Length: 293
Figure 1 (cartoon, rainbow, N blue to C red):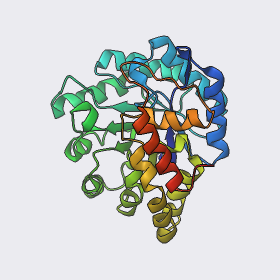
Figure 2: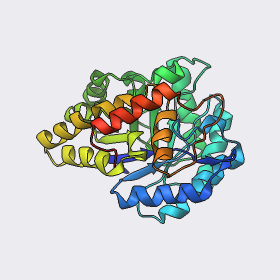
Figure 3: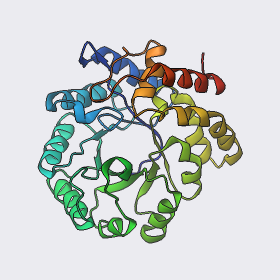
Figure 4: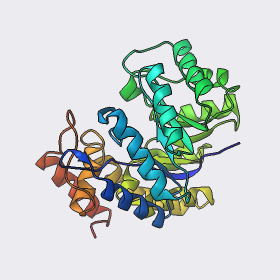
């Protein structure tokens, strides 16, 4: 069975003059792999997927697959609040060469747990690929409960959960009810050490867009049993983790990348570029962590 472990980057989508900056995207992929990242996740929340056109969505995934050249897995975001659209996105990701799918709970509609379960079953009956389910109720207003995951255990292509409830107890509940059936990846950088300590297998990171080596080091130390080393690095990075969400993601991490000259300073409406006050706080956090260079 396919497993997900280590540090995966929830890739930003760089824009230049309103269009996807394909050259910058390829360079970001190369930098991620060179720094030791274990996998790449294009077209998720951090990739501003909901503001990409269908054509752009497929193109971004294809570029990432081509640039990766099989060196690490590409798990492409294909989620939507429409089951029909999710199937279409999943098919496009498969055609683009993705190794797996990231499927977020259907947002806005606020389906019941029966509806959430039926949604995932319907998608994977049409597009059977290794899949990570993404639970982020703070954005979707829909929870993916451990009990629902139990009922989904027979869907062989669901192999992992990106857990972003902010509650480490949830990871323990999943392990208690499902054993090692699913890999559980943290969807919150600040919880990587804690989540891996109770059975998680890694992180799908926002911060690794800007600092991939450091984020990978945390996950790899935890996997190797170096709790003291991972904890020390996690404490050092904590101010930066927090700074990445002082305004809605991915504005802060895109600001860090733009400051470093890696991407143009662009984000799509209705998101707006971080305010001057937020920029100052982000710079201060980066300096505090010793990452300014």
